[in-house]
Length: 329
Image (cartoon, rainbow, N blue to C red):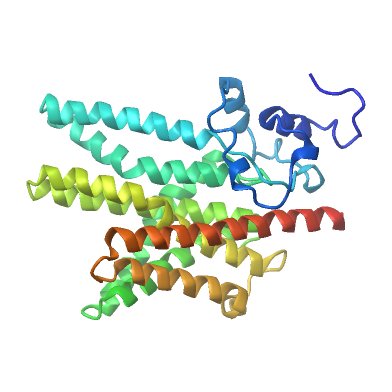
């Protein structure tokens, strides 16, 4: 299945694993972003074995050495399968609630509706984590715990602000809460790569987004407006990738870019490489919540595109970081 005249590096288990999953010759890969190639494997057939192999990475026994990590653009595909599965599950709950009028389906409708897109986006970031040094169970842990912790921290800030709540203070409060949570997970240098920060941040943001959407959906349900329930789930789902998930991911990546291999110091938070990304995230969040005529949905769509442009720029920076570290070994 593999060529026999391989170098010693190419004979490693991790290269063979990456090559088996990717099926793209190394000569055809590039560190430069080619968006048509990033999603080139989404519509191909994939076996269960390929998915199972994806889930074994990140443990003490399966984390590759830096010299074995490919510093080229990954080609994720599992996230698309997760999205389809989530849609099918949501359709089942929708039929149970809307057609059969069975209230036992409502909790599932809320949970799947609120978490489908954030989880799908999180899987994408997990597949893009080229170092493959974070196990999936850890990602889920950060999503749950980080999501609720960031919400509680935000509530503390809101309680302090009391009546001084507006789009700007909301942006500062919620992004600061997520930043504190993300940094608490990555500050000990176990996850020191830019792509690690991107993934850990996405996990915190996904948890925050899913829990918040579930809350808004429940409010719509309790008000007796079933139609508004579906509208809330639909729009928050469509816009979720460019909201909390992307913003927290950017903050995490910016912090890891500043920290690198150094121990955590508070002055890292005032370095320009971190501040400019964090302030950009706060600005986008404030604009997202601004009640300007025409902001919904076109303004949010524009902000979502802008967020993902920065995401891809930081992914490229993360891949270049890996390439530089490989040269230093």
